[in-house]
Image 1: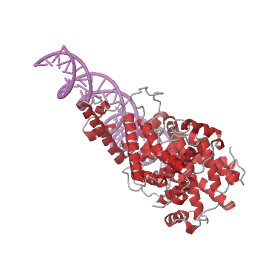
Image 2: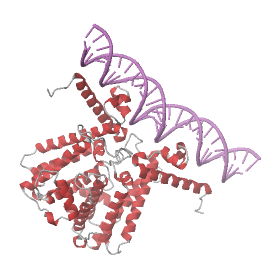
Image 3: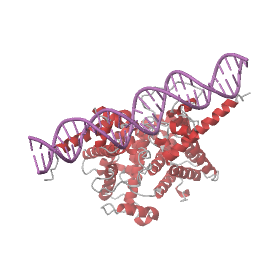
Image 4: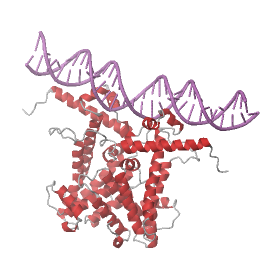
Length: 250
Length: 250
DNA sequence: TCAGTTGAGTTAACGGCGTAAACTGCGAAT
DNA sequence: ATTCGCAGTTTACGCCGTTAACTCAACTGA
């Protein structure tokens, strides 16, 4: 067996896909605020309540959309990485970073959905915890976000394994940070100095900061085209990771 | 004269203040999404259309709110700076940065309003340009944002004037970036190497990145309390600015 | 083959939203 | 004293998310 996919289930899955595609269109065309259940239903020739057969609320639909978008940008980034020589880890990291920036700039609405303020969705007076249903992954967006971060983290870790860059020894790291890093670390199956993940976090923060500011227009007060700034940041990161000499402008 | 403030005008100004205060309450209590004209009106014992006597749309009200919030965080930051010795510019910058982070963490809704994705507000199919009325500042939020940035930029510039830190010479900066920096620079009344503002941008991006990620919960996948990470970043920035030796953990 | 069940989809309705138009009534200006 | 401007109202339109009650086709089991 393992194939209990009835005809109904197939149709249902197809409809779910259609809904998400329509939602995606609305997101792209009208921004995160223009994403409405009624609009999606209209787009599909349905009435709004019909969608409740597939998603229990707009909120959940958005969550699934987020997960899809995460997976998509992950796919783009890994594809870009795989277009680089397998042994050029530093080059792969640079390419992945540039791909991320490019994706952010060409998909502003999706970027805002993933990386903008999450305060509006969630954190409202909802249930303290969602019903603990172990079957369904309770927050697909969260898991997809993990996969996304793992791409960068994996590359930084690989870089360290190939040719260690300078990191603080475990006992040089401030205890408050060390303990937290250790806790996070214990969830990962790799034996590396905690300092590696400290460096990763620093790199990721700078990458995120640059891309976020540019994508949200927070750099326009100074420059119109932030690409040189981004590249300068990349070069600096390459230095941090012990690959100053391999940095190349594209 | 210069005092044509009639009784009516005073009342009107007071009402405007009341409206903004109520809007602020709604923002704090219910997030950026919970900020509704009808809610504000209800809070004031008015009906919703009455607010249109004071603000032509919800959008404009939000814009004014943003400007107010900017001014408020600016005031907090300058107050914190002024609590430091006047000759300790580096200390002032550190204090201002910590104040910014603290404000962000204690005012999540306001922070999201100022620094979250601006894609939902604005950029929708509105008029290409607002009517060019030179009396009223057409975008108070934008101007307030400038003042905010100027606090950091001013401190970095002052730091350089007091004791120059290493920067790229103008002709070492990549032309694409140099020209843009020069254009921005020409709007400022200070004769400094372009590299200073390059360094400022880099610092600001890193500060923004750290605070933004923490405030939006994008660091919780790794650490619960990002304060050590923030302090590490600050220390690194102090180094960039030639003040590695003056950095002190608070 | 026929009854019973499931589930996709509908209509109708509730309460919320931003906003526009028309109207009321008071304070101030002429 | 009359007029006028403006604060505020009522009413209305068209959106929104969500719920409840219903219809009807397809699948199921005897």
